[in-house]
Amino acid sequence: MSEVLIALEDISKSFLGVPVLRGVGLELRAGEVHALMGENGAGKSTLLKVLAGVHRPDAGRVLVRGEETSFAGPRDAEAAGIAIIHQELNLLPHRTVAENVFLGREPVRRGRVDRRALEAETHRLLRWLGTEDIAPDTEVSRLSVAQRQVVEIVKALSTDAKVLAMDEPTAALADHEVELLYALVNRLRERGMAILYVSHRMREVFDLSQRVTVLKDGAFVACSATGDLTSDLLVRQMVGRSLDALYPWRRSGTGGPVRLALRGAGNGRVRDVSFEVRAGEIVGLAGLQGSGRSAIARAVWGVQPFTAGTVEVDGVPTRITRPRTAVREGIGFVTEDRKGEGLALRQSVRDNALLVRRVALRGRAARRSGDLADLLRSVNLVARSAYQEVRFLSGGNQQKVVLGKWLAVRPRVLIVDEPTRGIDVGAKQAVYRLLRDLASDGMAILMISSELPELIGMSDRILVMHEGAVAGELAAGASEEAVMGLATGHEIGEVA
Image (cartoon, rainbow, N blue to C red):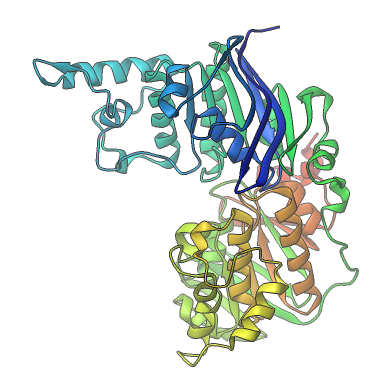
């Protein structure tokens, strides 16, 4: 068994008399990826802050290589070899890679920053990590999200960190970028680092980790070897119910009249796309990154319009060249990037929830606050008030606000792109129930997702994209193998 680098024993923490952590324990071992899971509010973030020296525990012990210690602040945790990579990357965009890596710790020669040494040491660390396609003198603003994450890892290595905590590291990454992160995490583990990996994504936890600790309501539930777990058992530990209960009952039948139809649509990103979405059904749209899934959504929404074929809404051909037109045609769009495109983060819940309605009604007075309260209750929003800024809500509650703004106008067609990205299992179930309820009320829903269990569990039919075209259609309950067969260009019968 490998050496325990950090141990947290019986950690408890309260804020204003409210317990947030209650007797939580955690061991981080050299050469191991240890996953930390739990719903939003389970205490994961607070535990990370205890590990990082941001919060001092009210009770319990922190052990570094078996010796009890106390962190007075983040610098003490850093000195103990602990580094944290937060979900919101903490880099200065207009500084170079090297300047970010050694920010506040720049090598000095003759009273001035030694840029040659700065860049040489950064290059050495990049080479050690096996990533040499990033130049130390490159401005961070020119890097992709995945490359910025590499810079954060190199920054941690520059402090001689032996323990690396990663909070939702793939939340903003594309599929091909996730593979890069996998390689980096495995390389760090092989070189003896202890990695605490916080994620809501089951597949990542099973792919990367050797052990999993689960928290619920601030308390320790279990620590298990990943090989001894199943997805169903892990969900039961987190939320107290099985994976089968996660997806709401799917009604039988073929749906109502056709709400949205594409006939031979194309725009350079997709070609000759034809399909229908009926009232009362959820149609899943699957495919690998770059297959054209999101391109279809953005074209229907008018961001990158179709240049060929036709779009029909309730049987009437329409030309949608901008989002405002889509709103007035009764089409809603929940973007995959809720923070960048779906919300005004510094505005209130109320302003966000009524934003689309104001557009739909061409600036007429917004609905009364009583109606707004009913709207927010319908999505089970948890917030201090309707006037709380959206940026202070959890990821799951932010997603409920995004959905709520479309309920305010009741579109005939709702397109949802990665509707549960970055939210916990409990919040996912609330989103699933809401989408199923909307479909049952006659809305037509086109759902795009990279999570195949989610797509299969929610969809009445699944359309699979491959290289910009629809490769085929599968019935409800299709296997992951069948979906991936079409997504990779194979016939279903060819997939082992």
